[in-house]
Length: 300
Image 1 (cartoon, helix red, strand yellow):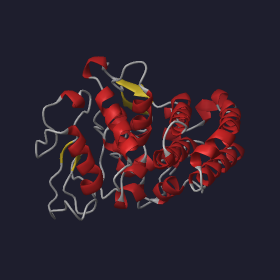
Image 2 (tube, rainbow, N blue to C red):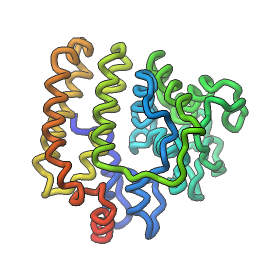
Image 3 (cartoon, rainbow, N blue to C red):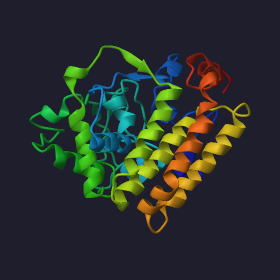
């Protein structure tokens, strides 16, 4: 499997040139585009998440949690709620006509909720969401019911496994407004590599369906890494990471995911670490570097 979701997202093109990064599809195109694509709001969590919240964090960042055209584009919960906050630069014409907002009754995203009217609402900051009395436009008193409806009704996703859903709720409840810091944080190579490791580690402690979802989240995180490695400078590393992603796909579709992870997990992680260790000293050549990305965008 060759980064199926990422490939679909990267295939999306503007009128003039293909996107370098998938997030360009839902980011306002201004002179600050390179900055927006290399920075995100501060994530309001404690220094150490529970195992369940870690798994939920990976699922929050995976398009596999959603369904329909949103998932095919590569959209995840994190696209609107960057690091669990509000993405002030979000602008996807199918979902909004103004920046930083999204239409929760869009026909593009949902046959269930679509009302034929473009009526976006400001994207909320999720820090402290677990302490709120009500959620969403209908003031739902249950966070669990609200989140389930967002997945299955607003985006036409399949209901997550019970364990996956519990993990997602654990992450949302871990978003603590009292742990917030002002400003933003850079999206770095090391952070994205760590996202891959965290998702892969989570898969090793879950039931089959949830482990499969987390391996898909791992593949997607690898896609977010690979797309920031320009060719031809990183052709070899991209090929190695793509091969590792295909191995994850084989694990996902095998008969026994737990057994596959037990026998192959350590070897896979060691090979991943070996490839990514080569990248650390060359981060300024990648699209994690704002200047490098700005230059590439200007050429496009």
